Image (cartoon, rainbow, N blue to C red; front, side, top):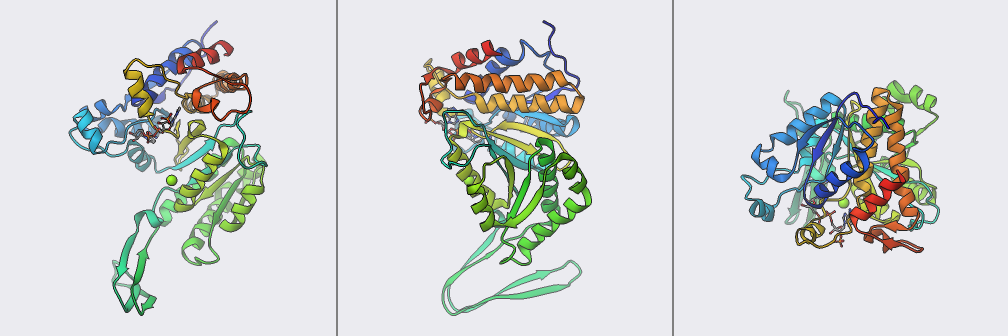
Length: 397
Ligand code: NAP
Ligand code: MG
């Protein structure tokens, strides 16, 4: 059989520990036998990041700007212990943070559903994707612990000397104050990413804030989304048969719980942080969560939502068998290959991505899965190690 051809290379970002081991096995068993894989390879493994003084991370993000589609393995974000373990020159920043800053993107996280692992919420039948704005608000705050009676004010001083002053509160005793901000440019790229992503997956987009209470701050988010939608996306949404709708966060929460799923829920930074953990847990497991970073210009970087699974890696190094779940990493590959196929007009490559996902889900539905899933599974499950699981998928494929 002739292998499926590609036109443009994928940007391949290799990573660390257990996921790096799975990465190579996924390529060897599930992709290379069928696809004449073209990638531009960047080794984001911690050792190589250190050797290149983290230039490799920047270069991989720049390559994503150039080619448009990347697939990323989980990577270690160094802390003091890692600096010692790897003898690092510096405590390099989180690769995901660096890549996000260059692509200026929004992160979309969606659960992968399988029969036998039931969402806690009975009505959910399709995945719910959370789109989290990843800039500002309480994550970039300034706080004061007020020692006693006094006056708090909000003051803006423009570069032109203009001053805007608002009273916050007159304290009669001790308390706390917080200052937060966001910027129009970041909110606008968040909106663009959400609209682009909704079109790319053909799902409705919901957006919620608390604009009834926050009449200036949250209202600005609502207005920017509405302006961009009217000016640039309404027509495309109508053509695609999908809708955009804005509602209050309280109403959104109630609707989400009553829904069947199958839509994207755009959230401000804090709401997205909290709600994505709630959604992931209620759907089952972090090992079954995909994650894609979408830039406002339509560049895509696919990855798994989980980390490098360090505990399993140390067991692997001791020569013990591991049953690490490769599903989210497989779906990162299939997502990237499908997107590459779409951009380059290669239906065979898109079909291959569909088949790879189907073979993976069918394997689980037949009762063969890694240990983490077997413990959640309602029904008869055979827990296998990672290699046996990949081989079972390969034989279906
Ligand atoms: P983790 O790698 O996600 O693993 C935490 C635990 O969750 C594992 O010990 C395992 O539980 C379970 N788990 C996660 N993924 C699994 C999978 N695919 N199959 C089976 N079980 C899975 O998080 P962490 O241990 O906190 O972080 C490890 C490293 O990953 C850190 O250096 C961190 O910086 C990095 N990290 C990277 C990313 C990223 O690149 N996107 C994200 C998060 C963390 P059991 O041990 O109980 O089986
Ligand atoms: Mg969180």
